[in-house]
Length: 503
Image (cartoon, rainbow, N blue to C red; front, top):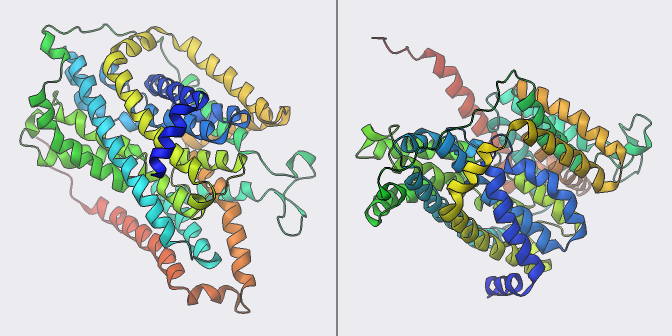
């Protein structure tokens, strides 16, 4: 019933419906532009949410994130250049199909797989978030602190190739969050005598610096030749632009497997779509009866990773709505928008702001249908248009919009300077294989973790001993230790494997 009320709200509020449609269109376009991720687009658009109602703001950004994951498949299939890392595995068979003149078939396969995978993930979110929220409603501050620690360590250990660099990125974000007035004593902390830092760093300039400006630097700094325009390989046979029912039935088991893998990966904080698509591709290829065709243009090789990377979207929101702990970069940004509008995320959100949450679910389902229609009918056209726009126009425009967005949030030139500073920091983090995503998630999580820790030690005279008396807390403390231990053991064993003999 609540979900039906959410649909009623979406379709009877023209402003909200307009933002859902706009989010689907922008998301597909943004995802199809190489180097411009959905996270970067959302970072630039967060300031807009200050001036619109909460549901419209959240729906707009949420749908952009969904459509952006799909949009990356367009340039991956047509031009062998994934618009996002989530489409990296789609390139393998997607572009091979394009070279055979079957780009239309590949794009339609990607569209169907993305829509099905996203729908599976969204329904898991709808039913899973409320269930988990009901189970965790009675948790206390010690349990929540353990959950925060678990999230910090899991994100830090899996989001980067190096466990140490991932954890260092997480600690950097948590340290940034400590700058400003102490929430209890109101004493300035780490402000270096600057009045602008009394309230700490604002989320918007950090987002824009670490995700947008650093990406522009990454695209501009390396020596590059002029943008290569690609000649379109047209279908020789009309059937090459169609997806037959027989082909769809052949893909359905792989779409199902990819959806399941993506949903499970989405529940793990910080892992993300890029991991899901490769796991789904590898496991599906191993079970495929035509595995020899994979890598040479198998439509199943497009279906599996596309279902997986889009299935991540819904489950990655479950930790945010059920626990108040964002499990992905986009979830962290949405948490910021919730807080901007005075909505406290966590188990009680279904009681205090249920209309907004179910409206967001309805917007997500509507957005999936919309980007599916856009991809089915307009994917090739969007790819051709983007391919003809030179990079010398794309990235200066992105930089200008980013700086305007940084200023707009608080009408502050200080925020613009912060965005530029963190743009450089983000560029070097990318270059040195540190994780800007882990930094942002930790920045958002740290205030809640600090509050939970302080409340915990005030509940008893035992100080930190209170955590030893909480079974739930001990379980969450143990989870990351086991995960990190498994990864370290796997890394230690890897070099001992003998290399395969070369022929």
